[in-house]
Every structure is written in structure tokens, then in C-alpha cells.
Image 1: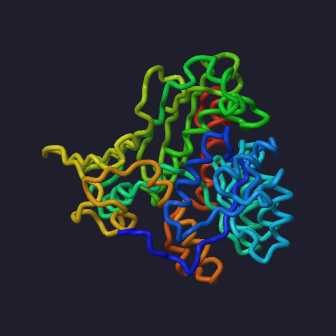
Image 2 (image 1 turned 120 degrees about the horizontal axis):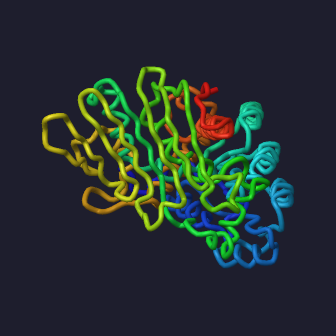
Image 3 (image 1 turned 60 degrees about the vertical axis):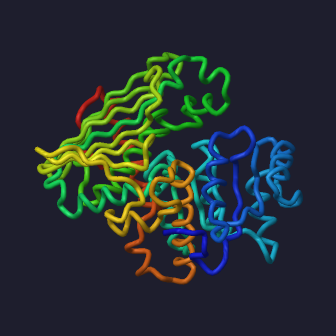
Amino acid sequence: MLNGERKIARPFRWAMVGGGRTGQVGYKHRLGALRDNTAFQLVAGAFDIDAARGKDFGENIGVSPERCYSDYKTLFAEEAKRPDGIEVVSIATPNGTHYEICKAALHAGLHVICEKPLFFTTAQVQEIKSLAKEKGKIIGVTYGFSGSQILLQARHMIANGDLGDIRIVNLRYSHGFSAAESAEKYSDAAKWRVDPKIAGPSFIIGDISTHTYYISELLLPHMKIEKLLCDRQSFIKSRSPLEDNAHMLMHYDNGAVGTAWFSAVDTGYMGSQTVRIVGSKASIEFHDYNPNELLYQVQGQPYQTLHRGMDYLDASALEDERLGALHTEGLSESWANIYLKFAIAMDAKNRGDEDFLKNFIYPGIDAGLEGVRWIENCVRSADQGAVWVDFK
């Protein structure tokens, strides 16, 4: 169980690029990183494309005025001159900027934590992966829901054979917040997400489906997609060629099949994300709007609901426990869990402990690579007329 005691020798000196006053995700990053004040300390940032607004924002969250910079290049250059300069940077900017900022951060000798999707192409991710290896740095990807510790219970049960042979994978992430065109008319954060120059080749496939796809990888590390079919739509025509709704079919290398639905036009729906895994003996189901529970269904028996924090769970599902059973946890604790894991991974990397990193579970560069690979294959299938494609 976590109680805030340090897991590493000292907190990392941390900065943010983006995530300022008008951003949607910056506060989530700070909640995650600063929940355990033994892991990160926010000391600098280039918080906003508007330098004056970014400086004002930085001061209002406690960053020294002289360390609130106008842009990421100045941030990296000036912090490199300081004996107490930053060691880690989080990138919380629109998709199209991730690649250049991440590359510059690695050349500046920094570990990187980046929003998803990482970049536009797998070729870019492979390049950055090689650069990170050369520089001896960690890249973490903020699949924020994946820190829900009940997911590690699900992973354990699948690996333990409690479900039997996995037959069916069902993924869903839908909401209705973009059901009307007005969503992007009144929100800069929504507007760039439907601009291909900034968002990349997809809207909801990149913006939300990568979260759920990573959870499926977390639960099923022994299974790989062989073929995929994707059908995508732009129900709000002004968003074309980017989609606001998509359906996928998957064939896995063990014979299992999968279905997926991702949508930003699921009018009125507030449920968010569901993952269901069906085996030959039993099934499990996870809902991120109720991340304290895992539904376990054994054929011929009453449904069981496994609760977060209980002693009957596997040890792996209790390591990140913070509040104890009956005390509700949610998204902010999930972010805190993955940020703490980023810190532990970076500390291990700095110490050269590669054996530890081989078996340490966190969303790193390979998770980012697979997320981009997922987007590329979905878009390729859809753009060819919703045909089956080899997953490559």
C-alpha cells in the first residue's frame, strides 16, 4: 500500500510544456505528478503559447517567475545552464507538436512524459525510441486510466487461467460531448482535435481509442492483433476527413476475435470506457466510471464483484493502493499511480538497472509505439473502404 513515503532517493525536478490555463489536461498531469511529493517537484515550465498568459499562470501555481518561459526551446536552453535545472519534462500540447518537443527534450538530456498519441507515424516513434535509448532516457505515455489498480487484478486473473482460453475482446469508449458541431466552435481544445494538420490522421481513434487499446494490451500481453477492419464516420461533416465515430473488428493470433466502438457523438452518454474480456470459463468487465470494481462472471455461478483494496486480490493489485477499501478512488489516483511509476522507471534508468525495467509495468515508449501503430492500421483500413488489413 502507498502512503506517500519516498520510492526514490529524491524527487525529480520537473517542468511542463503546455498544460496551462486554457488546456484540458494540464491539471490532470499536475494532480498525478504531485500527489506523491516525493516523486516530482514542479520547478519550471513553458505553459502557454501566449507567453504572458503562461507566465501569469505559472506564478499562480507557485513556479518562480524567472522559470516561467516563453517557449520550450528557451525552457530547455535556460534550464540547462542551472545547477538545479530540470531533469524531466511533461508534454501536454496538441498532437502535432509532440515529435519536435520530445526530440528536443531528449537532446537536452531530459526524461520525457508525453500525451497520447505520441506522434503521427510509427517511423517517428521508432526514431525517438532509438534516440531515447542512445541518451539513456525514459519516455512515458499518459494513458491516464491505466493506473487503476483493479486492472492489474484483471491481468493476473487472465494470466492465471481463471478465464480459460480468451475468445472475445470487446472495447468501448464513447461520449456525447462532440455530438454537435458547436463543440469546436466554442472550445479551442476541441477545435484543434478536428484539424488534421494538428491532430493528425484521426480524431477519436487517436484521441480516445488509444486509451482503451492500451488497457487491452495491459490485460492481454500474450495476445497480438493479426488482422483488423475499421469503419469510420464523420457525422459532423465539417470534421471530415477526420472521424467522430468508428467501429473495429479484430482477429488475434490465438484465434480470439475482438470488437470495438469509439465515439464522440454518443449523444447523452456519460459512461466513458468499458473493457470486456470473454474466456472459455469466465468473463471479466471493467468500467472506468466505476474503477473500484471488477465484474467477474463464471458460467453457471452468480456474478461476483471484486472490490479495490481487498485482501483477496492479487498482490500486484494492492501495491498501488492508496486509500484502503471502501474509500473511493478515481481518475486522479490513476494518474498518480502512473506518474509514480514513471518516476521509479526514470530512477532505475539513471542507476542503470535494466533488469528491473524489463519486468516493470508502466506505459512507456513501446506502449506509445503500439498506440500509433493502432491508429495507422485503423486509418489504413477505413480509407481503403473498411477492409481487412494485416496489422503491421
